Amino acid sequence: MRILLADDDPITLRLLENSLKNSGYEIVLAHNGPEAWQLLTTSPQPDVALLDWMMPELDGLEICRRQRARKDSNFVYIILVTSNDRPEDITIGLDAGANDYITKPFNKDELKSRISVGVRVANYENALKITNERLTQYSQDLEQLAQERAQQLVRADRMIVLGTMAAGIAHEINNPLTIVQGNLGLLKHFWRQFGGKIFQQLAGLPEPGGGYQPQAQDVAEMIENAEKAVRRLRAIVDGMRSLSHGQGGKIEALDPKQCLADAIQICLPKTKHLCQVQVEAQDIPFQVKANPVQVTQILVNLIANAADALAGTPDPSITARIFASKNQLHLSVQDNGPGIPSEALDKIWSPLFTTKPMGQGTGLGLAICHKIAEDHGGALQVESLPGRGATFTLSLPNETDYDRFLAERQLSGSGHSASEVPSVEKL
Image (cartoon, rainbow, N blue to C red):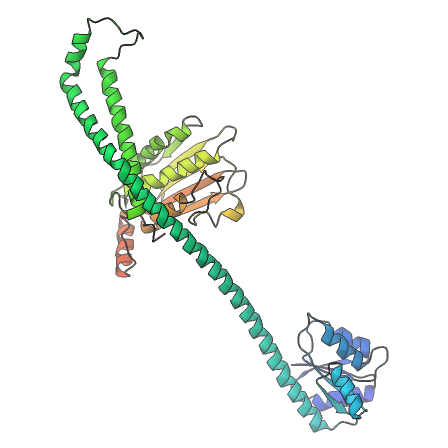
């Protein structure tokens, strides 16, 4: 506890100091008003101040007024030391901001008692200030938490609506798609049986007006391309079902090269007029278990996002890599676009947050991908510097570590299996 003693009379100051010398307090001395004011306004501030009422240049009364007028000061318990004991003088001192007074000549025991009272009050005020600061911070934290929870509820509601829409759209697309797929299968079978004979019969007929006459292998290739397109549509429908129902695919031995090839093929409409996706693939020395539909879904999102980010970039490039470190498989997608603003890096995994212009992004892709990675015992991370592009890396554990992760998760009762795409409610 720090005690300030201020008096312009050296004898009185020495008596005050001797009276408190063995009380365990830290004593600081001021020989006049300006010196006392400097000590009151310098850190560390005293907790209790004994001020002589009458001092040259700056008296104790004015110091009281100045101290109480300060808004940035800690509480200081002020005791005026005075030879005036008239009630009106005492009232003036208390009204100026003094907490107590003691008259000269003072009694040593009375002085110690009044100092003890001041110490108790100062301790109480300091503790109260700390408590108020904590309550203020706690209130601010609660307000921020309430805002975040409100935003999460709004996002969850939107996700439910989007999931319901996705389920309906998937159902409407799936019915005619099944018919198209079935007819293509019949057509393919029919062409294998009779395609050659048909072309033999057409061989003697004149060429059509356009001058182009397809060959048998051309028709077979057309049918094959149509089947590929149907499979792509089917994958999109399955992805929409996954978004709404947590279904699609199953855990099996993963072929990362095939997942990447499928993702590049699906993203071809976005990338073919932009740049070719460069692939650097290493052989993986261990087995990985994962849901290939979901892994492909992540890579599709990453490649599509990279293509969107490269709009307007001179010499755009996208590089996809497959490599291993320790016991993890890594699949990364790197672009040389403008990068991600630093203030957005911590938000990109949040549902409905997007850096794309209005109408060009929903903010769902990365949130879903991040959850899928976690449900596989892996992680999805990003490295980016403004003006130097971005690199997203999906990391998946090897088969042994995945089995251990799944066993621990089931033991802790954490919910759905990693073979499921996270449902809207769980996002």
